[in-house]
Amino acid sequence: MEWLTGRLASALPEMGYVQVRYRASSWRALDGLLRDAQDAITATRERGAQRITLMGFSAGGATALAAAGHDGLSEVIGLAPWIPDQMDLSHLAGTRIQVIHGSWDGYRWWLPGVSPHHSLAGVARLQVAGADATHRVIDGAVHGIAIRCCGRLIPLVKAARWECAVVDALMKASQ
Image (spheres, rainbow, N blue to C red):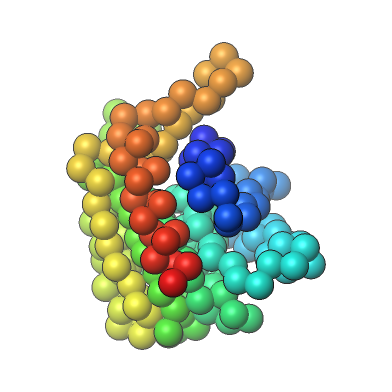
């Protein structure tokens, strides 16, 4: 997300960006991730933000969904989001949710990931719950956008396509 956030700030400078650094970075700690996200939302509002779009990658997607749907948080962009089957989505009725996923994502080469079929099933559940949810697949993209190596961020395959898709999603969210 760090590489992407930097690119978005350059592409859409009229928007402000806050990146959450979770105290624990595990999908098994969703309650803690949610507390960190809520703290960031509160701090963002205290800085004067009038409109907030939540964007989360992987477990951050689940976190954004858990945080949305109330207090004026009605826009979510999920990047390869993990949407647990047991997650209650009823609070998301009326929320616009744009899911973007890489076609090569999933558990591959002993690396964790989230299958695009999983997020597509999550979008179907979101629609049943009354959310305005869409699903977009980036052909050939993996579970990740960039990695840190030797102190710098290296974009992965299809990182530029991720960037374009997210810029499109942010433009829709701002309308």
